[in-house]
Structures are given as C-alpha cells and as structure tokens.
Amino acid sequence: MYGIGASKVRLINGYQYNDMGHDIFEREPYSLQFERIDDQGNQKRFSYIATHTKPGDAVVEINALDDVYDDVAAKYER
Image 1: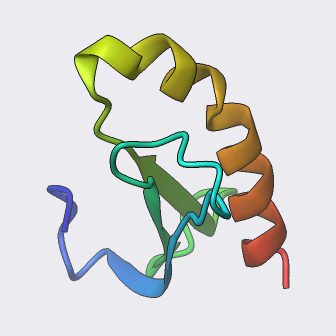
Image 2: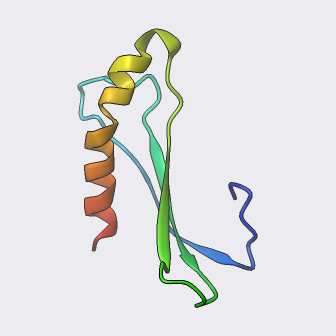
Image 3: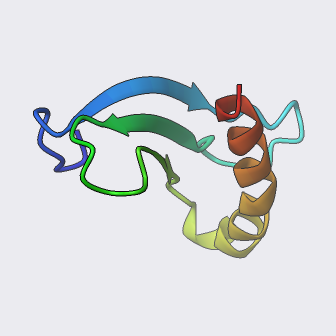
C-alpha cells in the first residue's frame, strides 16, 4: 500500500481517471484516498494520484494532470 503501514491508514476510495475518448494518456492515472487511523495531526484524509507516462508523450501527459487533479478532487469531495 505505497509503503504506508496498514495500522496507520485505511483505504477509503480508489478511482481511475477517464480521459473520455481524448486518449491523452497512454495509461490513465489512478488515485487512492486514505484516512489516517490516529488523530495526532490536522490532516485526516489524503490522496495519491499516480501516473506512468510514455517518455515521448510525457510533456503532453504531465500538462494534462491539472485536469486529473480537478476531477479527482471533485470525486473525493462527496
């Protein structure tokens, strides 16, 4: 689980971005949302967005990540 101890976090949600036929990404980014189990900090929920870019398309794919972030943030706000 990304090197995070299972006793410290709980997986809440997972989501794979859909570029809706624009075919921007070689492999669509995916995200996981976690919740901390202990309450010793201010941030209780956090998310990771992971992507694997094709070297020849890296600039285009990285430039599209702001749309991925917005989409993932909207999904997890619910």
